[in-house]
Length: 234
Image (tube, helix red, strand yellow):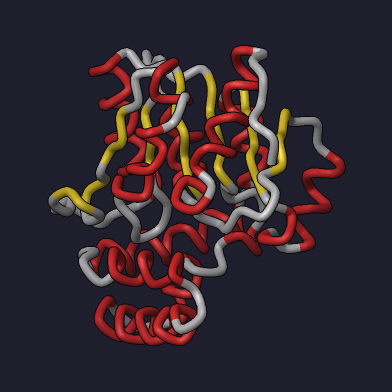
């Protein structure tokens, strides 16, 4: 199972999951994307460019499953549609369903360049981090992301979300397991989920980064869905 982090994050967000039962049942492969833990791409970074990276990794490891967080759910959807890509199932961890889900990434389009966005985004996270250790961790990782990659991907994510329906792209790409805490989702996304039949499971009390603060619950929900195993009590 490939594991791909969302906007500005890297593979470290999946480290707690490596100590769960999920790691006993699946070979977990956290992947750093270009600009986010790996060297940035020489060309402009887009969802399609990152989809090529993910598809190549899936071919290399013959990975039929991928866990994709937030905006990386779009990347995984596009990768699964590549020729000869073995991905058959996407575990979407609060992946982008509607344009409103791009509340972090899409903000990049409001700025004229990478450095202006980076400064404003980190300042925004600083405010949120005061009361949230989870945001504090995220802010630290984002501070090490490549500024150009961060801005380019954010601009592309907004353009994609405004011109297409990410939920429809996800549903058409592969079998889906959507994992989410309704408290973290915009109303538009909850409305979409209520009207579209995709397999889903609720992560009670989890943050947007459930792999960080609720790794065992996340593991249990995935195993219950795929292996029909028992689930730890919440």
